[in-house]
Every structure is written in structure tokens, then in C-alpha cells.
Length: 179
Ligand code: A4P
Ligand code: MG
Image 1 (cartoon, protein in one colour):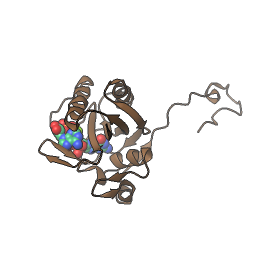
Image 2 (spheres, helix red, strand yellow):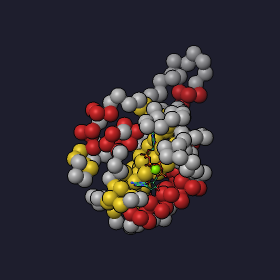
Image 3 (cartoon, rainbow, N blue to C red):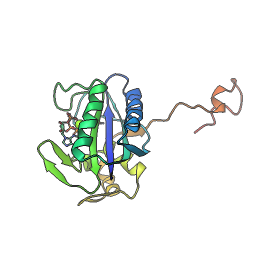
Image 4 (tube, rainbow, N blue to C red):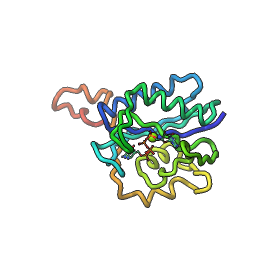
């Protein structure tokens, strides 16, 4: 079994809903056990155009090889309508393998740890939310890279309030107290 971390991103269609559905889809895959998921974040496009992205990260445990995991992630991307007209094109769903245990892979079609993760708030912030002590093989603590990406816009998306205060009548002092 290997503990892996995936980074999910989307900025086409109902990107926010797609990410939520994709996390559910990952959790339903028999060979994957989702151990943790980050909050959803709204992020500025980095090295890309189009609308703001939504991003999140997932920690999972799996008996799959890294190649099998990549194939599964690509099947899920395809299921959610992913097309690849050009590099960094707006996408309905992107799933990147950020870390796969302490494996280091450098092959033409698979690089792990993901080579651009340390320079991107949209990858690092959700990852560190899940695991503040996370260490990137050969590079050290993930949190050490956060100051360098502090200029990149990223904001946590608050889920719509489902608690009692939301249904309170106008003027009720208990309304709007949810955080
Ligand atoms: N590939 C190699 N290594 C990996 C890996 N660790 N995980 C290969 C997944 N795939 C990996 O990916 C292209 C090829 O990368 C695949 O065939 C796979 O074999 P792709 O998903 O088809 O294309 P892409 O996503 O356009 O390329 P890439 O390299 O994944 O782009 P990046 O660098 O991940 O950037 N801004 C914000 N705010 N949020 C985002 O999510 N994403 C990108 C994509 C740019 N800017 C963004 C975001
Ligand atoms: Mg990708």
C-alpha cells in the first residue's frame, strides 16, 4: 500500500461542483481509500488563461502502482469531459499525482513528485492543509515553500451554511452567526 497525494483543478463548466463530484468518484474507486481531503480553494490561473480555477487536494492509500493510479486518474478526467486542445488549456478536470509515497519518478510521461508543485500555491496550500508536516522527497517540508508563493491569489471557498442560523427569519439575532 502506498500513500499518495493528488491535486485536482478545474476552471471550465461548473468547476466547483465538478471537483466535489470528482472527490466522491475517487472515494468510490475500490482500489483507493481516501484518507483526507482539503477544503476547496478558488485560485488565480498560473501560467494559464481563462477563468479562476477551483483546486483541492486528496490524500489516499492504494495498492495500485503509480502507473495504474495515473491511468485511473486519466479515466476519471475523461469521464468528467476533459479535453486537451493545448497545454494548460482551460479544463473541466485535471488530476495530478503530486506525491506517491517517497517514490521519485522521472520519465517522459510521468514525473513525481510533480515538478511544478513547489512553485504553486494552488497545489501547496491544500496539501499543507491536509498534512502540515508533509515532507517532499529530496526537497524537504512542503510548508517551507509557502512563503515563495504567498503572492499568488488563493482563497478558501466557504461551503454554503447548512446550519440552523441560515433558516432564521429576518431580524433573528441568531442568523448569520455561522463561520
Ligand atoms: N504527467 C507527468 N507527470 C504527471 C503527474 N505527476 N501527474 C503527464 C499527472 N500527470 C503527469 O498532463 C500532461 C501529461 O502530464 C499527461 O499525459 C501525463 O502523462 P495533462 O493533464 O494532460 O495536461 P496539463 O494539465 O495541461 O499539463 P500539466 O503538466 O499537468 O500542467 P500543470 O503544470 O499541472 O498546470 N492554475 C491554477 N490556479 N490552478 C490549476 O489547477 N493548472 C495548470 C496546469 C496551470 N495553471 C493552473 C492550474
Ligand atoms: Mg495534469
